[in-house]
Image (cartoon, rainbow, N blue to C red; front, side):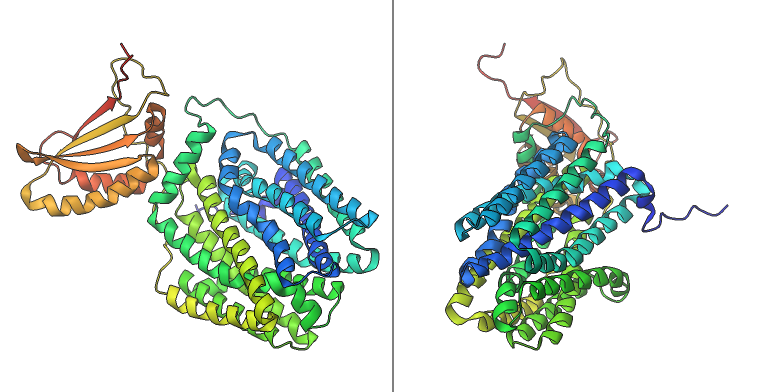
Length: 530
């Protein structure tokens, strides 16, 4: 019998729940892009300079930089459906405020920036949770297709929303544009109310906010592979943010366009992103991840340099199409590299760290390029950004992105720890000692392998790690690591992956003797404990 074929790219849409929420999300994102076009153009109508224009971009992305990690924690410990509904209500209120101020003629730069910042807070709280609910809506074999459809949906909204927003802004004004955004949030709220999410089962080892936050930060601090992804993302987005921060001024001052033309430019970016998503499988067949990032950086730099030369309007549209292709290639490559190296237990929090770096680089870059444009002009700022992007693209090409080929499925191979009496989950800290006996001829190889294990221990929850030797018996080596509580150590038992199990198995082969290495658990004794 032949093996069953893999789920097609549109198979998740056959599920009613996913299809309804996906469609509502596309409409909601379309409204959000319409709102962003109205805000970006409205600030130029208020007579603001380059610094204030770039401040709108920064106000929308800075909250994600500040709140993405706490939002990732909340997505793991709260009811995700109710949390998303509350955030949608907040965002609808923001757009309602923008609509009323525009309708009454009371809008000013301060109010626009402030409400954009509050909207950024809503986006920051929402982003990790939207990613986290996808596995709840589809089967495991459809998960990749669902993730791809979500990316496609965002780019459909990016293609439609800015163009529709620009046209509506020209025809009916900012208040009507913001009103459409309010209606789009109502549709998303109705879809979430319709979704009957199963109640989450009780978990004796469920994390609280503080513990989950610290565990996520420990993982991010100890993961060298994640550090590479974050470095590549931070530098790319810091330079590429120049085109996003200055595009309203490019459209108005360099190209002489109106709000409708600005919307068309952003729509061209969305169409380019859709085309790039469809082209990406062919590009992956000839380029690895590092090659894709190099190509995306060079293409974005060409677009920035072209816009700096104030080209004819007909040439600006295909240039923005190319920018959309470059943008989706870079986003997908970096996000895919991050997803491939993250185990499920920390995926939301670690992706929140990635979002923090992404939005922090965009916010800082937007502010920085706005200040540069204020000093030397928009064309010179774009040329400087393009030259810098080319330079760092070739320098970072040597810092290879991780392949992400390790098996991160939990191995469940650790036995339950032996205890004389039940241990309260909040008791700690806990010290774990593992005794090895290693011959002198294997000592160097053993210690080299131990360095890999130390990163694993820290990623999975240890805040301290070391290895010691017995002064009276140098062949006896003792590994130790510290965990903040008994519950956190029990969680470690569920976090160890199959790839980590292979590392531990390799270490055990250095152990001399018929028995397994001895494992002991020590609990801190407080002075008042009997």
